Image (cartoon, rainbow, N blue to C red; front, side):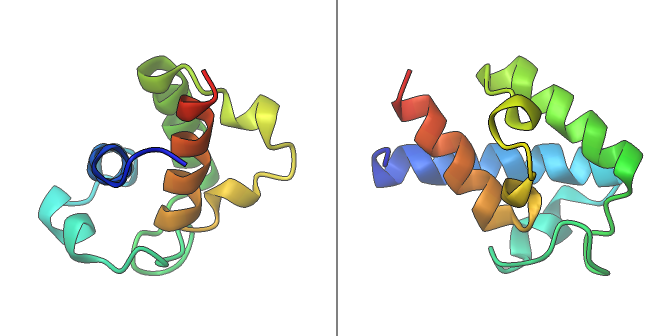
Length: 92
């Protein structure tokens, strides 16, 4: 896994990208627990917003989540997406 500071930076950036995709205030998403469900009531990502988020993650980090995680388990929560991206950043 990446350095703790690097992972924290990835999580902060992903929270910002999630807020943008879900059209939520960044401050609200910043305060949510890491295990918050991306498609649950607190964030409420739609399938279209999820696709937008995946495209943004690919552009920003070069991690094609949809191609690398066919079941898309990494989109379960803020933490699972952060772990997935951070792990793939380390391997590159």
